[in-house]
Length: 214
Image (cartoon, rainbow, N blue to C red; front, top):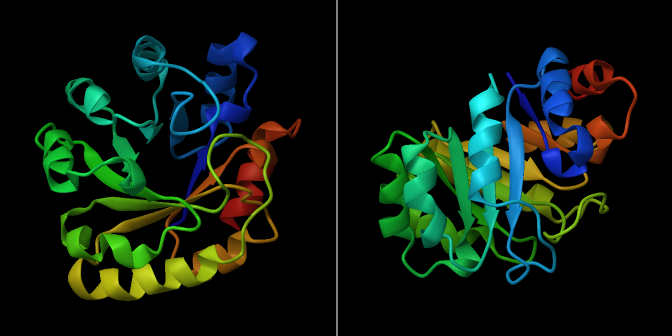
């Protein structure tokens, strides 16, 4: 079954707890948090204290996507808090094996995120060590961007290799996901769809999530 992970980046931050409760009642499978540091991407979101508070009130798995230049600063803490999914960017980390183990020793699902222009082949050496891969279908840093179609081929390549060496690997796609591209993303091998404005930009969260699942 495909999992839908609404991105809190598109929610109303003034009503954050209410938004989280609403998205859970609407049938979301995962809550996606984009952490931006103003360096790796040209934007700022929230840091560790807010992540902890969100984790404490959320009943579904929490997925933290680190768009930061120094992911190692976050990983041990996120691991101790038992954040369900944590990904950091291949482009930002030189010691990928080491950082994956930091998360996995705490039972956290550890993933690598890839920018649209980064070839999926760059993570083939560590694919057997990964729990999931987050493929960006927009350039990270801002919500509401248009989907970049080149990711279809990346997903297909990754799925074919993963089926051979790590069939449990989950493929997550983030950026511009909607009812138009979701069927093809799923057919290419995606397991988790991150949707921000498509869900939170609607008056009916439940309807939007059901559309993506169907």
